[in-house]
Image (cartoon, rainbow, N blue to C red):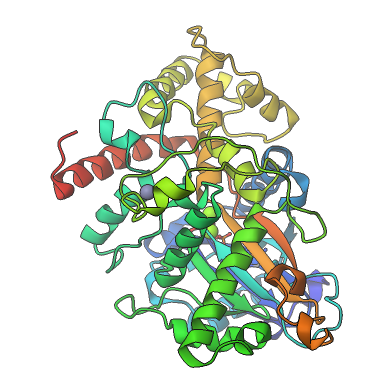
Length: 468
Ligand code: ATP
Ligand code: MG
Ligand code: ZN
Ligand code: MG
């Protein structure tokens, strides 16, 4: 990529989240991730170029030196900071504006700093996939928090029974964020039980909200509708999938084949999530570890519950990696908040300590060392409080990340003997799994987290008429 010859016509709108907008290159398998600001701040929020550059460098360092060692080399791509010509960024911003979903337009793209993050396009599969004519499929899942808090500081009993995602759904529905409850429960996805995962993925497909997107050849083909009242069209998705699942179609017809295709897709996603990252490695034997149930999950009262039990996740699979990092939050916000206050108080007294304690980075090896060597019990020290705050922030990143699973057909299924055509899906696809959106979460979002948590819990208790 020649930075002085950037042309906005080579790039197109790819997607966005709350913090950044992403454009993809029309030919090369690359994306640019640009920061966004609330539009009312646009006039004065533009940081100096130096600040924006530092901000993105922090993201890269955090990815490379903190999240990569914790989540595993093979899953994390840290990217590189790029300095783009301002004219290019301005033209790009105009070009993408009409493609942006309305619900995201409360923020504007940063057109002042010219800084961006260049990453591989994870919706594409880099090594050539055996010359198959079908473009790769990519499923993006934002799984959210996969465990129930186990901290002794948790005061509201319901937090030990109902997971945060399920409680938050009620709050979001009441606030008009979504029009329908999602039946997805992260505890089912993270259970490691094939049946529970199947149901969780099915619920994600039925109501994707911002937790599931599907791309084909790098183009978004399935996600929540911009008009949130309208449900996304599963039949249309099945039409897209048909060419990838010939073996299902030959067996059934009509409605039956749609169901079979849908089911194959779910199984494919499930096995990629349980694999050790790429199809070349085999699935490890399972650990028999007991896992939790969320009382709000549709599976809670399901007869399946007693049949399937829990299996736990294979150690190296992407979900297990994410879950381990999420569990660095072992005090819960209830136990963490007083420690956050301890740190704040200390810094008020000794402002210069902020640097030594690496509260806002730099995100280097010694930052990770502080996180790893944090005492396990509160010895009253500032190091303990800082260590726990840093661990909590890393866990927040892992609760907010996305998993990208990119599949490409091997092209073998057509060449197989007719009696071998019905191959399990895993033989017909090569795939790769990555984790993205691993930004550091700022310390000063902790008071907000604390308040939000109690709002969500209280609202849940009121709306479901439960006491405690
Ligand atoms: P959130 O609101 O979830 O925190 P964000 O603003 O931090 O999101 P990202 O999640 O990093 O932004 O990016 C927004 C979207 O752009 C992603 O959901 C994904 O669909 C797409 N995207 C981001 N990075 C890549 C990549 N490297 N390859 C392909 N697509 C990407
Ligand atoms: Mg995201
Ligand atoms: Zn739940
Ligand atoms: Mg993010």
